[in-house]
Image (tube, rainbow, N blue to C red; front, side, top):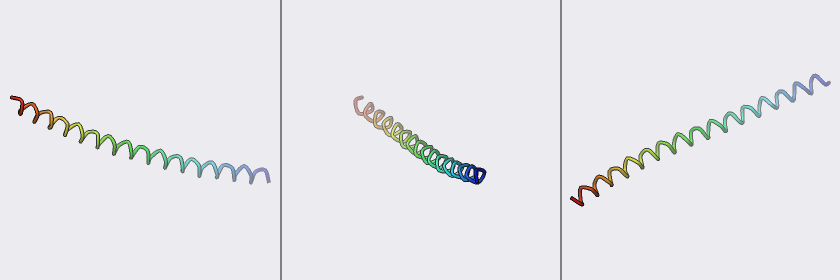
Length: 57
């Protein structure tokens, strides 16, 4: 019986690892999305700054 209990515990740990890996991947995707959005924001800010500079000339 102890062997079955240990096997069950190993299976539980495998499932938990899969859950954690999925959560990690979701976080990585969210970070990638935020990086993309931040990059777009920087481009827009630069465009506005350039436009403002042309207006001051």
